[in-house]
Image (cartoon, rainbow, N blue to C red; front, side, top):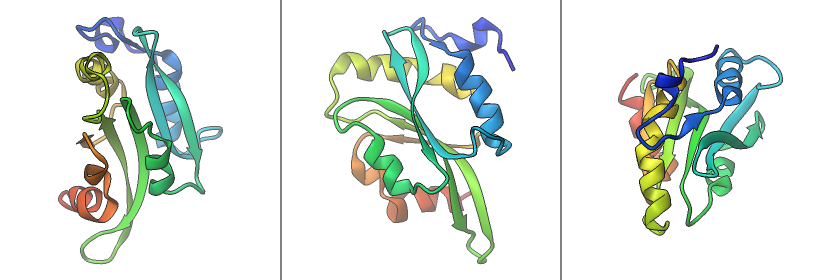
Length: 151
């Protein structure tokens, strides 16, 4: 699905690539070749949000976190399987904005100002998490409680 450019561009001038939109639609439907666990997105040349990495279904949340750069910003989209409070197995697609305190100021501003463009392209993702250090990506302490809040 191609989004109008006004939706895919933010005040920073950063665009979301068509590949991001196409792959997301197949990802949420579990279609090949995007039957994956996660995507990590980067802003290329300060202009376009593109797929930097993908993790296959066998990967875990810990693998996802390890694929994030320690001192630079990224966006992530991950399909997380978990049990609801009443014990039912379920899964949710989660958008994560990784904007570490240790990143240089300019990338932090660019990623903060461009996040809405990507979020508007990822239609149907209900859980959004902003993380500025690894403690905010702790699965049991931060991620799981955020997921269970809506179940």
